Length: 277
Image (cartoon, rainbow, N blue to C red):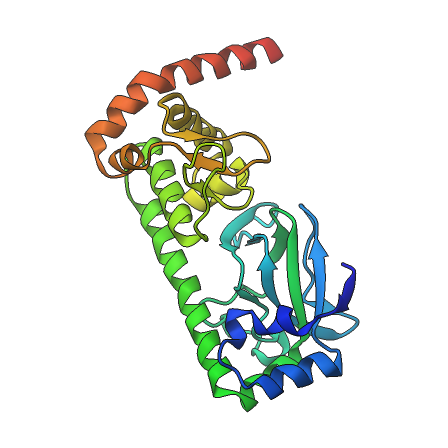
């Protein structure tokens, strides 16, 4: 990741530094250790370079956090998406005893951090970040608020995973939660709400706790029902939010939608599979 010195606006506009003493921000910029870099889709973020740990604040874009499964090291477990303003690497692994679990809201020690779309990041050496927290109670308070937002997001995800019998209900609820969590955005062409960032089916499946094929079927059903619009490498558009809420919360409605639209998808995929054989 190529880096350049951050300007004052790029630092001061972050939620982490909201209402923080301006002199502290000025010193950060003048000392040159606050830097800005970009990750392209699919690039991984490393928190340690040449024995130096770094803390990152997301300016634009979304990161996906995964970790190796505890039971099958060849598989990855989805942890979370991280959105603009969230902090990555708020505590150095070297400060955690080897048997200690990561603090609530923080990423596991073995996590893999990947850009799900083009990302712009603010980089601060961890030792400098820690010193800033000691110097500013307001910055510390802001960090706690951001960590609580992480926990709220993970609580919503657990609701999606543990409930609802139909895949359409899980997918609909997940999309509603993501639309609510991420910054308000609408399609310029239709005026419908869209979910910022590129959400690929593989990551959405891991978020929900189902296979890639299952989440694809759920998305297809909702698309055929006219509730959403999605295309590869484009944000998901919610075309009928009220009906999507009905599918997410009403088992009877979800069953009707599943029965009406899922058969065509299953027939189509079965035919494709037969041709490949």
